[in-house]
Image (cartoon, rainbow, N blue to C red; front, side, top):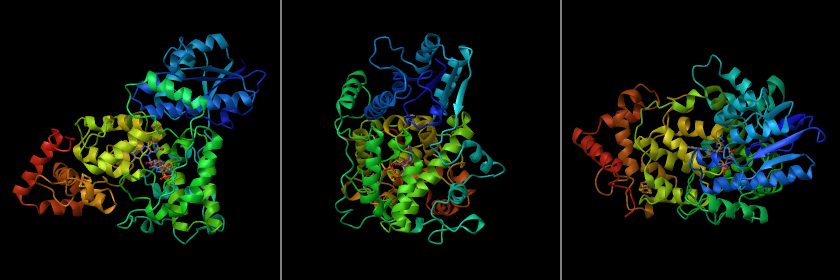
Length: 517
Ligand code: FAD
Ligand code: SF4
């Protein structure tokens, strides 16, 4: 073999840079399904199934394209269980002159593969991941010399550079709609009757290949969390393109206004559900952004929805990737708030009597999906207020979501949600009482707790823990300009009330409150 191209489960793109100059007569592709990728964190069944099903379909696409492939299946009796061991065994057998791959999405995997290739006396060559608009180098250049990093400036830079939703060109270019940000129009809950009939999610019934994977995962990872009965994710590029089209037509028109809203029993709402297809590289960020922009120009969606959606991809997604690769490996161990609690065991089962959490956890385990505000302001907020060790929170998020790949999951969890990086990623800790969840439609009317109460039998645990959080971090938060008002409100509480909050927070931490009967 002249060139051996390594392809990981989140690199399923026939046009990736690693294939530039690929010559089927001399080159070959290497892929491996290994147990370690499902066990280094306790990967949920839907997540493992999605990766394996998409990998097997990609293997078929490679064969159709006539690219020689060395593929190790999970159920192969000789499977060595780790990417490193599989590659170490393959290299002498294939004797490639060069080993190359598209830049991977996970520091741990990169280190492991690099070491194996070095042991074989070769250098692992990385090619730029063209899937992203920006390079890590561009992000580093943007970050250099700035005391704090903020999404907004990086996002504007990318809008200008790539001419996305811009009028005019060069230095004259202005954002369409006259402003960069329509967040003020994008924060509405649904009315009292809920979201009305939400369009059904795009469903892709498992074909024979996927059914085989589902059976394998159910048997091999029977004790792993999550369920497979409702598995309907896109696992091929064609399916992902169809899911994109259906999103643009059916959901994007309502995306902006309701992107922060929740509704009990409605997991999908007006979100795109495209994160897994994007992260596995079944479709590209450009295809998704261009489709949303075209829908705006065709008059199918308003600017607030188009901009609100594009900001998530051209903004947040690019930003967290730059952050991850410029901060790793140190980023993983941050714990700015010195949180030291264990994650409650019911995060893995949904067995809690807090309605909003039960709803978010159940849909997470059933589908491997929750939308952003559930991840940030329900499951994430509770862990932050409780004071859970950030590395445990990280392991949970990396396990349960079908779209979880470390470069995107880690900054969102450690930085945005847990404030463990001390404010590098988020401008302040995202803390709120149960009243926020009530306002956004989280289901308090059907809950045994009352979001307005901070102490007493019916006090909402979020509300109690919010005041307890302010108390525990009072000195730190008082120095933060955007938290000062919240800390001032705390100072108004009489000492007896503060003591009552502390006692109830302790009871919550000891599992005396919140666990399903
Ligand atoms: P939509 O609401 O339709 O948004 C469109 C797209 O924008 C998404 O598909 C996604 O690609 C991108 N996007 C939106 N928000 C973000 C963000 N904050 N960071 C990066 N990209 C974003 N996203 C992941 O892809 N993988 C993860 O493992 C992941 N873990 C998260 C953990 C926590 C604690 C939090 C708060 C957020 C996490 N996110 C993660 C970001 C976001 O919640 C998901 O991308 C989104 O919910 C996926 O659903 P969707 O495709 O319907 O998104
Ligand atoms: Fe969640 Fe509290 Fe509302 Fe119950 S009362 S649904 S625990 S926010």
